[in-house]
Amino acid sequence: DIDRATGKIAEALLPVLDACEAAFTHGVAGVEPIWSALIGALQKQGLEAMDLEGKPFDPNLAEAVMHEDGDPNNPVVAQVLRTGYQWKGRVLRAAMVKVNG
Image (tube, rainbow, N blue to C red; front, side, top):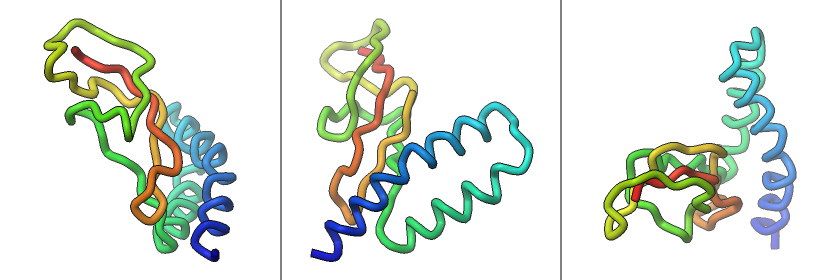
């Protein structure tokens, strides 16, 4: 299946996206165009970065690795520690998050 094969290639590139994101966050000059080009090419094929911060925690999309006090009946993603990605609507890699609740 071509979708599964291309998904495996995208999954293999996730550490490269993580490195680019970390470099960008730390102000490394010149990485943003490379990161944008790579993620743009992958998005055209079906990759989607999950935007979870401030949204209700869903264990199907994210792994809670840190907790802070909050409403345990309504846990919310307080911070995304590692971006999660979907490939054509399926979770390719769960996000790593800090949960309030």
